[in-house]
Length: 471
Image 1: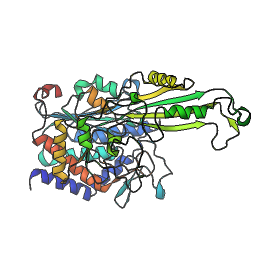
Image 2: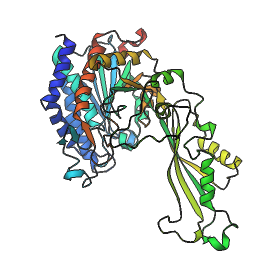
Image 3: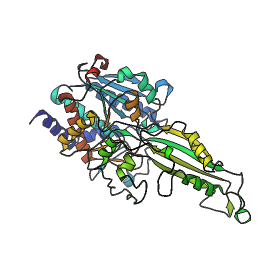
Image 4: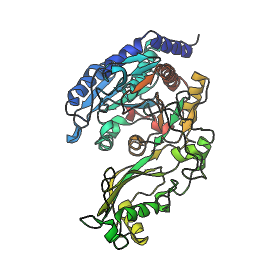
């Protein structure tokens, strides 16, 4: 048995023996909710007792920044330099979790205890993100145990605020570019294409949320006496929204779209099929841009969704024309979309369409980013995963949701490879979040294969990047 296969066999045994599950149980027991003040103590303990210890056991120097620059985010960086001439990988994970939703889990489960049922490992953080970064930490430890070295330099960054928007992560990365310099970024978060398909995604869509308000008068007026005489704000707002996105989900304003779908993205998505899981809704026929495949609509294009829409009291309507109507919309967008001056451009559009009485207000914007699917690192990672699993992975130019990928691609200038160890039905952010044992097992082997190949095989690193700067 060659060394690679020996390490893969050890990864399989690490799951079979229960060792990985035991580590996951310990990690989940820390209620590290970043959205709650009381979660701060659990986060600090998780950093110190789990992550610092694990990194130091691998021979890493550990640096820590608590509540960096006065923010609600803390950062932990483990660094192991074997040789400045070797390639350097930057890994990433987040120690925080969302609200545990205690008392709302099925079968009386606690979010802070891992419950095992038919290959499902239930617990808050099992999928997002403790289970995923524990897979990668376990793979690194197995590599060291079997060959005494990694064969590359390692930097592993953890943050404590991903679930609250990664406050100050971009500023931290910009300030610490020397410490975080690397040749490639490899991390695990988000879902695979589906439970059975190994996946690489290369970035994330951005998001822009905005509010549309038609505040026409302070009071409501009798619909019989005033109908046909005064403007209805709900009717007006619905029509205004229709100039942005039609009733079939097709964006109507060209300024909310990228110029084109790049050929490299189209090729990457050509064989990707959206197959909903058992608990997922079916894909609606006739929804969205009919010129695009379902995969292209989610992973390669923009969507505009109405998240909330209201006027008066819909549960207890009265015979009156409301005075105000309000809607919250969100644009999910890919790279190549112009979001500069978005609020003023939206307002100018509404004014030009005769809806000057509707006010647009931008609330949040987070950027999109993605690595070109033709980048040689993508083929390298795909070949490694195919060798490990016997299956070519799905390559998604970006996930439909959001992650702070722009920090690593745009600020640090790294090729970004995300290899998720979860799936769309994992119920992250909801009660009954879980990790599948099958994905944990395969994911650990995939991670072992990737890290082994990074240290042993020829990797696509430009020669000028292999400098002592990685120290």
